Image (cartoon, rainbow, N blue to C red; front, side, top):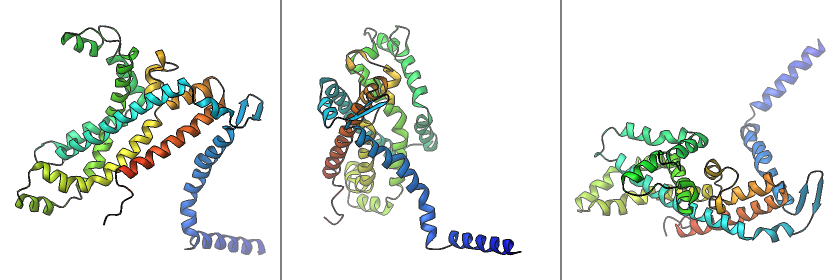
Length: 307
């Protein structure tokens, strides 16, 4: 009898905690906090600690700044150059072209808009491995590859797409642009839904042309999305690994497809030099932080709305 009473009290105590207004917020946010601590903060601290170590199987030794002194070598600068070019192209393509598509899809000039929205978004559902395999078939080195047949019809020689610096970069940028174009179009379309039609009617009364309406009405409304997409695309560009891996796997001729994350993979995983790989990762983190701050400053993200 006493055990039953004690059990009832325990259940009431638990239910009172679960339904407590003070405890409820902590309970709801606890999954995020726990996952953040385990999956983000702990690996981050471990990477910083590891960057000062020589990590070999069964042997860990603190070596000061030696790993960072090795980072700035010709291979790293090649990877940094490739990654920077990739970032510039993807930011231009994945922020401007989706904006144009979204404006057209939001206008009354285009019919079957739902079909076009779905068609643009479908590539985002495709695995990068599957998409990369398809791209490798289309842009194969043989004369029978689809891209080379088109090139030869135009009167040019067949191209070895994966073995030229420019064409290899084109393949990586094209694959990323093809996959993420639809997602960015949806972001812009969501922002365009909030633009008041009264503003366009007022612009029509003032005699504004299409460009003036876009510059003074449309773009100010979608500018926060433009800043968000340019920042996210920059960060994702510096983190790019899959697009390079599906085309070149372990290595590329002359490191034409090597990115910074690919360099981390080569040194940390393939060559089992985890300390050096962690040091490259910390340098990459610093680069992304500085570039993002500069980018947000240049796009006016830090300015107040009334300035």
